[in-house]
Length: 458
Image (cartoon, rainbow, N blue to C red):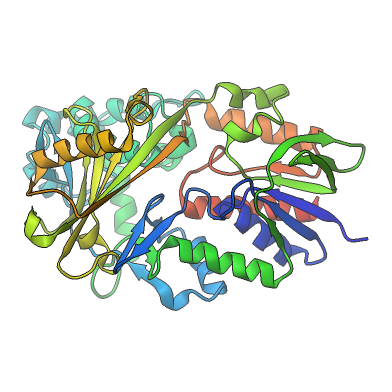
C-alpha cells in the first residue's frame, strides 16, 4: 500500500516540497492541505488594463538559482524577466542620496565612491576606515547585526547606509537581528581577512567578471509571480498530487506509526507530514519541548501601498529603481520602488507606478489604520521625496499581519535544537518555511526541497 504524505500549506514552500518529494519518490501519495481557496500564500499578482502588479513579494534574487531552475523545469524559461538597472537611493535625514557605487549591502568595496558620498560625514568615513585596524572578535555564539557593524564601521555608516538596506530585507530591528541567522558570511569574511572592508574587497576581486552589459540582480515573470505558482500547481496536478483547498488543519496527533490530522473537523491518517505554514499557525498544533520558542517568537506586520498615476502627474527625473529609508528620517513608509522604472513589464506606456512599504518592528501603524488612512500616510511621505500632482488613478493596499518572523539573536541555534527535537520525537514529520531559516522566495524553495529529501529518505 502506497505511503501517504500531507503537505500542510500551499504557499511557495509547500508547493516546492510537494514537487521535490514527488521527484524523489513518485510512489508516495501526496495531499496538499490549504486552508484558503487559492495557492501561493503571500504571493498575489494583480493584472488589469496592462498592469502586472505584485501585492506580496515583488521578485526574487537571481543569484540564488534554485527558483530559476524550478521555473525552467515547469516550462517558464521564456517568461523570466530581469529588472532594469539604475541607481538606488537612501532617504537620510529627509533627503535622497544615491547609494555609493561599489557598496555591497552598504559595505564599501570601492574607496572613491565612499569617500565622495555625502551620505556619511568626514568623521563617519574616518570611523569606517578604522575597520582596517580593528581585530576580529569572537561571536560567542551570536551577536546582533547592529552590534557587529557598529564595531566594524561605526554608528553613522551603519545607520545611514547599512541599516536601511539590511533591515528592509527582514523587516527587523537591526540591533536585535541575529548575525548568525542572517549574514554569517560577513563574520567569516572578517575573520578570514582580519577586517570586513578588506575581506569584501578581496572577495570582489576573486569574483568572476561578468561579460557584456551589467544585468539586474532580480528576477520576475512576464505575467507576475502568480504565474509561477499557477505553473507549479498545474505541474503538480498533472503528476497526480491533490491540492485540497478550504481544508483547514485544526490539530495533529502522533500515533505509534504515522499521524492523525484533524481537517475541517474530520480525522485523516497520513504516514508522513511536511508543515510549511507560518509559526503563528502551527504553534497551535505543536508547541512541546523547544517548539515553545514559537509561542514568543516576534513578528512584524507590514503593508504595501500601490499607487498608479499618469506620467504627467509625477515629476521624478531620477534614473533609478527606488529608495530605502533610514530610521532617522521622519516617515511612516520604509521604502519605495519606482516600479515602472524597475520592471518594464508591469506598467502600460505613459503611466507611473509607485509601490511604497509600511511597517517597522514595534510599530502598530498597519494594525491601527484602515486602507484609506495608510494611503494618506504614504502619500504624505512620498510628497516629501518627489513632486506628485493630483490623486492616483487607483490605489491598492495589501496588509500582511504578523508576516515577518523576527530572527533575533540566538535564533538559528534554537532552530537547530528544534529540528533535532522534531527528528527524534516526531519521526516522519518535518516543519519548515520562512519562520525557520530564511524569508526570500528561493530560500523557501530550497527549504521545501530539503524537507522533501528528508521525508523521502527517513
